[in-house]
Length: 260
Image 1 (cartoon, rainbow, N blue to C red):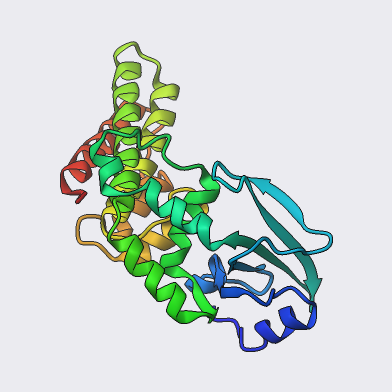
Image 2 (image 1 turned 120 degrees about the vertical axis):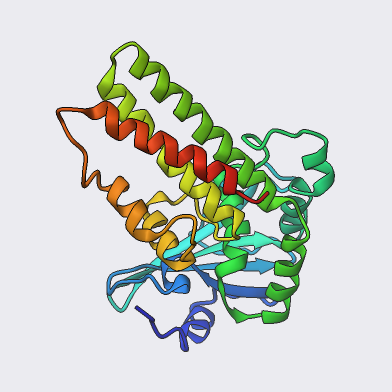
């Protein structure tokens, strides 16, 4: 569902929410990706050079030199709007965290970013610029030159592999219910790894995983195959181990196809 964003900048300015030194404003999340519904929130990222003074804003901690971002939300026309305020210098730091030099140095993919940072970098790729399109395009190009894809793909592969091993170990001792749960987690992480390898990010918002599979339309993971396993459509309660082994095989097959 496509929603009209044409008047958003004017409304944000009318409320005094766009500082004078703003470099970019872009809509993010489900609305930007075309996955919205009539009650979807309007979420915006605003990037400026200096810390904005927005009365009533909340702060969110981030592990950067400037240790917080600000968020401000309000209702408008039966919809919730939220603006998250980032500094241009914070974007520089996040891109530096996922440089190839950091990846080659063996920095752990599990620790390089917190979710808030990862979501920002992911949404540079999919956000809809409302102001400062040149800034957004430049940052997209810079992101493409980093090891961001390698970091997130490596992490998802590691998590998938760990859950595959757990599932097989649980089968060995007859813990079938736990094996099923581990296999389900392995499927999610392996799916994320394949998607991330193709540049379709979003593993920190798993509710959109099925939409990402549909959008990516990859030969190695047809939506029909994914959805049958995700919904456990052909799971046999009399033989859980058979379903677990099928999921494990798919996860191992997918890991071979992942591009880092």
